[in-house]
Length: 505
Image (cartoon, rainbow, N blue to C red; front, side, top):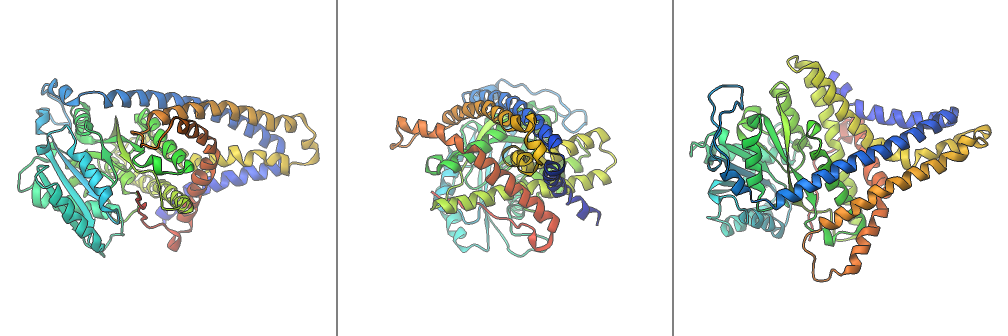
């Protein structure tokens, strides 16, 4: 019962805020108008603040992409450090570090899986230190043929290449990525890692979506971050998700959403104190084994794994940003309206993550007295505030901000405040558009190699498309987040199951 009550927190806060703004606009329009003006100004300054973080993260990412990380690894000397709080541990030579790559797949076509494996093959890191697992679902017959083609084509490229088949209908599991990943990790441990006596301390596991394409320096920069981290065995490692693989095939609104999502994750990298894991990420294999792998009964295992570790190690866990891209697909379907539908469902699934994580870690905070009260307050406030802002900010700015003019009485509509409210809001929004314009320039810089049909005039179209940002923020931002928070309150049949985003070329 206590856990169920915790699930109401995001939805109650969001709907309470919306109801309060509507009620105040009707009964107290002056107070509502002042609040909206102050909120718009706060949002403007926050936009400026976040844009500075975005540019800092972008510069670091570009610099890391141009760095020879194997050369930097060769400069490292083994030094004493205390990754687990025990004396006498020696930082290993970078050649001792093995990388386990787990790539779960469901209905993805062969062409997409092959592109991801080609990216792994092109890595500059020694292939004899890569263990790659293609984790398919046994219930999907066509995945077996794809797995056989991939293992035959890339046989001998890596130290080990393994294809696993996750059984369907196991007790305590849902059909989702987490259960597949957990099965694959246990299988590679049994079949490869333990027989080869590879120390768990020397293995970093990266879990990738099937469309994830890493750059040639990914494993080098990840290894460097691991060896230089103050707490290497108590940290996750997060690359920057860039949704650009098929960006030229995406319609304008899908491109805006893809770039906006990429920019948000760049901003998060610049704030490591509140960074958690998302989608493709990495972590020590030893910790993964100790916590029992990813949870098998939830949708958002990629973000929940952070909280599993944080609670298991009594708050001694953090996420290290590595400022290097992990390129993935933008949401593209065969038709425009199918793309819009998939975009909404994808955003709703992403918003489901906080709905699962908030009651999970709050319940853990209540039970675990070894985590400091300050840490509990810090994470609770920032994570819940983030979920609340996701569901409400855009509605307040672009929709509810005009309610005092509509619901207010005649005396308010004749006041100076009523006259100035839309003008002040419009002015603040115009200043905020400066940040949007600068973001559009960064989006141009992030474009992958252009196809043959791309012309200079297309650059103008890729700049103008950012005028669709308000549509994105409301229809593909606040609304799916609000729906997810409402569904978790309703519970039962309203809960979301795992929905893999269809991949299309």
